[in-house]
Structure formats: C-alpha cells, structure tokens
Amino acid sequence: MTRRFPILLLLLLALAGCDAFGGGESASAGLYPAVQNGERVLIDRSGRVVVDLGEYSAVRPGAEGLTPARRWTNGQNVWDYFEDSGEVAFSVVADEAWAPRDGRARVRTDGKFAFVDLDGRFLLNPYLNDARDFSEGRARVKTTGWQWGFLDRSGSVVVEPQFGELGDLHDGRARFERDGKVGFLDQNGQVAIQPVYDAARDFSEGRAAVRQGQRWFYIDEDDGRPLGSQTFISAGDFAEGRAPVRTENAWEYIDADGDRVIGPQFDTARPFEGGRAAVEIGGMWTFVRPDGSLVRDPSFDEVEDFAGGLAAVVVDGQTGYVDEDGEYVWFPRD
Image (cartoon, rainbow, N blue to C red):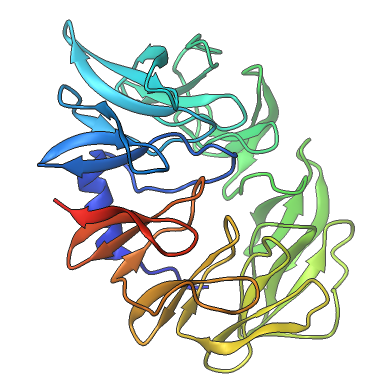
C-alpha cells in the first residue's frame, strides 16, 4: 500500500526538528507539537497550550503519555520527557531520543544507540550500531556488526544478529528475508513460517498480507495457511477489524471474513487508527469511519494518522490538528 505524505512530513520535520509525527499505540499519545507565533509549544487534546518550548531546539512525537523535547544545557544535549500535565517525568543526556514504546525509550549518543527505562536509567551503554523501538517485548538491533537481531526489555540480546532484513515483532511474528524470499520468525528467532513469499507485511490481528507473484493474499499466524481464496492487487494491514485492499483501480476495505465493508472509491487508503482511516480522494485527504462515512469532505493537502484522539493535517502549507469528527482543535497556522 502506498503512503504519500511528503508535505506533512517536511512540515513536521521542521516543527519537531527531528522526526515525523506519528504513533498512537497507547491511550495517551502524549502532548502534541505545534507552533504558535513562530515558537514551539506542546498542546493537549483540547488544543490548550500546556508547555512553551521557547528554549528547546527540537521536540519529538509523544507516546505512552510522554513527549520528548531537547534543550542545550552545560554543553550537552538534554532530553526532557514531558507528562500530559506538562511536568517533566525524567531527563536523559543524549544527542537524540525518542518517545517510549513498551516502557523503553530509544536514545543515540555519538552515533551509537541504547535504551533507557521510564526513570531515565540506561539499560545498557550506548554501543548498538542501529536500533528500532520495542514492540511486544523485543527491539531489533544491530550490535557490533551490520545484521539484525533482537534485544529484550532488560537490554539482553536474545536473538543474535544474523539477519540482513528483519521486521518488528507483531502478533508474535517478525518478518525476515532469506535468499530473496520472506518468511516469519517467532520472538525467539525460530522460523515460524518458512520464507516462501516474494513480499510480506507485518502481522496484525492474526493476519499478514503476503505476495506471491503479482497477487497479494492473507495468511494466518500459526502455519502460514492462506485465509480464504481472495487475492488482491495490493493489500494493507488489518486494524480495528478492517483492512484496505485494492481489487481493481480504487482502494476499498474488507473485514476479517474478507467481505467488502467500504466500497472501492479511494485513490489511497491507510489502515484504521483510533476509529478513523486516512483516505485520499481526488488528490485531497480526509478520514473515513468504519461504516464508510467521511468525517468531512476531502479538504486537506496531507494528513497523519490519529494518535490519542487527534490527527495532524496540512492546509496551504500550514499544520493543524483535528479531532475524530474532523473539527479543528488547532487551526493550521505558522
């Protein structure tokens, strides 16, 4: 499934100073980065300014109720993790830092990665060549070499780096590649589904979209058994009982039984997040409800997925936030 949001990505990179906005795994996505009168601020779900970030050089999207922002203090970069109240929960000295996942936050210092807990304590010294956020108790990492393995929440390597390509763990399965084919591992690095596919997406809600030849279909997480006989030109992840697929030219949505629940009408369609899915119609973006109704007419140049009840949107080059009904809680502004 194609995801196109270059304008929003660039604007939010400028806003955050580091990363694109995203994430919504927890009930609280944390506070939301915004700009008011040319200054960075953090707002809550109602659009109220909670923190003035005048002294901060960067802010990253929040997750699990914590939002990291960077300041320069005594010759070093310090990342403060703001709670929803605007209070700082903990701070970390690091060049870069990200919001927590599974209660662990990824950081980078002098080009090397590590993880800290929610008290700001390092679980290991920064020595990892590369690392990704935790998912289901595992983080994929590159240690001293350039292959991927898994780290557990204590900071111990539980699957030695040996894979050139490795995905995050979802539904107890992680994509891997061998000899140009894709299969799935379990959390201990054992092959759960043999690498026989030309391409695959992550598991979600017990299903993964895989491709053999030119057609996509869904398999189960136990033994890779195909779920139904349907095949698709393209297929996305299941979320909230729906998945975007393309059987003809336009995208539509199916349910877990493979039945069409929202008819083909979208130029682009993303998985549901927070009860809404971002869709593109005629070059403009909006959001669709599970019943197929649009929250408002397509009117946004770009959008991000919902996170904690709000979604970032761009209109005429300016970024704002809307709620699940498509109403602005923060109007697009500089």
